[in-house]
Length: 372
Image (cartoon, rainbow, N blue to C red; front, top):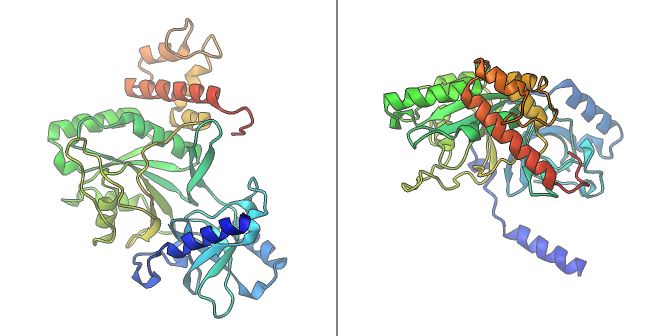
């Protein structure tokens, strides 16, 4: 039975058509990506005990097509597969992690072979993760070694989804990343509406988070976004389908490199145009990771990120009379008292309470064996 399953799996893999490497453009080269001391030291330590050490190289995963990595090294770019050792290693340790886009890896490539083999994922500075699944879910790494999250929301389609922005901020802060809110399609919004929506967003995110208003049609704000991604840094663009992510990236690149799709008129939602996780190099700037639009961003065990995204509310909560205060109706609630004295905006409090309630609910449904 196992042999039949393996043959079927091999047959499916043979049917997958991957884009030719020479047809891929705007990929970063090795020098565009930051190699830190911990990664270099881990590679040297791995190399000291590795067989075929002369075939090993440092590389970065710059693209994933249906799980198949594309790796750049100092001298080449090639497809790679996972070493069989990944199946044997402890998934809770760094050496057992499957590579994500942005990962720094130890990769082996035998002389005369077109493909390489990723032998080890080297330590990650950061990783942007989301919860996938329900009571027994897991954390899915969307990108590794990222510095900045560009939270994209479109203008001109009714009120902005502040809850989605707040959720993205919590995830970014929990992963130790710097969030930047990018409002796209400004040319579709009347001036009064634009000012109103911009005010709502700024009251939500506070003074510590940068907000950039853009229009790919007019070029407004494009250079301000580029400034958020300096050389040797890596940003990830996060937003739902139809938010204008690929259009924004094309404007940053200066040409139509990424496919864009039509938006449905009835709900202004888009279809997935990005099907791979891709790194692109921005002219005169750093690197951006583009991932497929994400419909859901569940918050499970992200209390640290919530406190970092809303520090003044989290600090006030420490003074509440009851440790399990929900900040809605309990006597002696320091959060409600601080709000009534103007300590923070209503938009911030509303989103904080909604996300905190969601995390309390998710904690009750988790399988007791899950370790966050």
